[in-house]
Length: 343
Image (tube, rainbow, N blue to C red; front, top):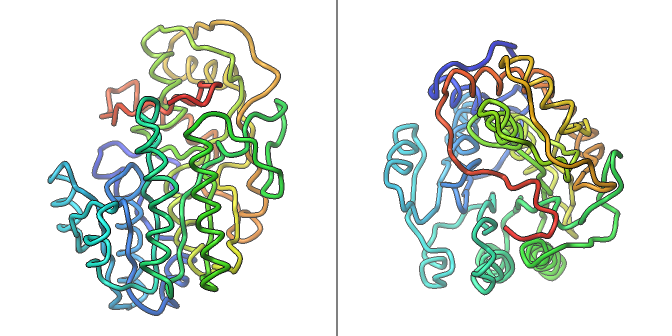
């Protein structure tokens, strides 16, 4: 992976969706089309493009089909230009879900986090009820589903973080509903002998959003950084995309659970100082580091897929360059600093 920072949105999208040789090999072995449910979110478009490019490189004629409500038609048009078939669908509409095409490979990307406070019923419907509907709709498919490290709760900091065998301790209704999502997938994996992988993601970064982008914006704008959540994990979204697609070949019954994040526990204070050096700003801080943080240990995933190609140091440099030169942002803050589970 070149260490030069992507300089335009087009170059960024190309980098995010560039399949590794391992991804090409993995998708070349798949038997049939790939369906992405909830494709219009932050990761879905680049994930769909990487899958399409990998199928093409492998000489496969399998289709990539993206499903979403597509409230912004521009997103749908961009996917279709890149050869991805799209279907507009409210996944909670059971008749519409039943009408979707069959596919032996399903990526479940749908869910609700931001805005969940005040919309708890919808949050539970999206995060817990919908997975049950999808498992029943696709009983013979292999499924890779996104979950979240939030289901662990806070762990001592600094540390390597929670591992997959730790008991969940979710804080707040969002995290509890996500644990419900996992339980529904696990139940149907056992009941239907359905091969699944559940990916506890924590957090992806693509230069337009992510924890590093949140911190870089505050440093660049001379705004104080709250240190209460003093440590975090992150992973370049291109690496997360590659691991997600390779996970399709590792489905298990009951569900295989993998943490998906970078290998380091990053201190907020040190990262902000590095960002400040790169952007010629003096970071400002509020408070002090708490004795706990939301952290995950992705060693199990690294044993299957190898370590990320883009290091945290490189990612920090890229984010600093992108933010300081006014690169476009998604304006979707992670709220990683929230310690009460409210989003």
